[in-house]
Amino acid sequence: MLKPIWRTTSLSMHTKLRIFKSNVLSVLLYGSECAGRPLLPSSANWKSSRTSSYDGS
Image (cartoon, rainbow, N blue to C red; front, side, top):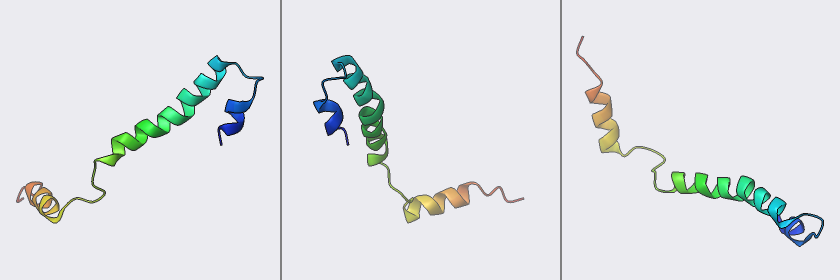
């Protein structure tokens, strides 16, 4: 909950921005990295990755 931090007058704007950058931006950037990736490989990709690593020996 960041609302009390934004409303307080005892913290400077610089401190509030540092809190924002360290907490909020890190979560948003992590979410953007994970958003476009599938959680599990598709069956075609999974099958080809299993057969391509087999060397036959």
